[in-house]
Length: 184
Image (cartoon, rainbow, N blue to C red; front, top):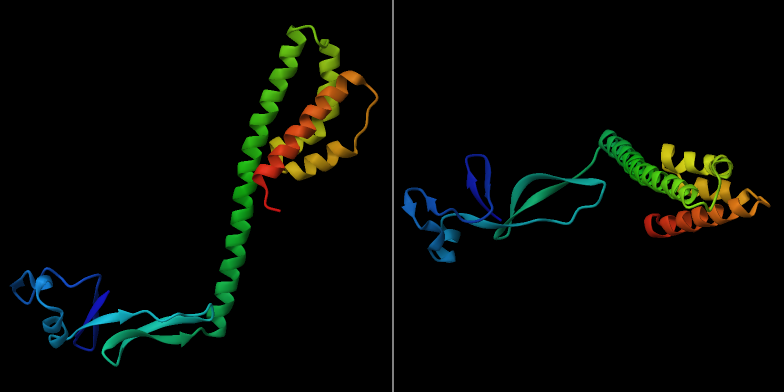
């Protein structure tokens, strides 16, 4: 970036303009001419979270931003924004997980119906399977909380063989989803 002093401050450009003060192809003139005319490189200083850029100032043969410490009020506002951004990020993740949970639940229910059609389970067994898995499926499809669904389902136990098959399928799918979509 380049800057040139105008009136009481600096005007900033991404690069030397093609036309300047009536001269066409000004940007193609030698760097020494630009420098003599007052053009300077902008050196951007490194700042911390408790600092901000101030006005442009001249330092040696360059222009840089004055570094200003944030006020306590600005620091507090930045902290509040940071917390809000983190909250929104978490909310967005749960919305994503909820949509994936709804999709998974619909496919799982379709599998149960197909198994009824194939004669692998009865309609009454399907109701029992749905009832057994319901609290876990409610978590993934209504709130997007796959880890809580895993916790709920992992604490359940049944002796009914026809339910165990579906419980195992659900647990495997939930574990796989958590591994692929959650941070450690």
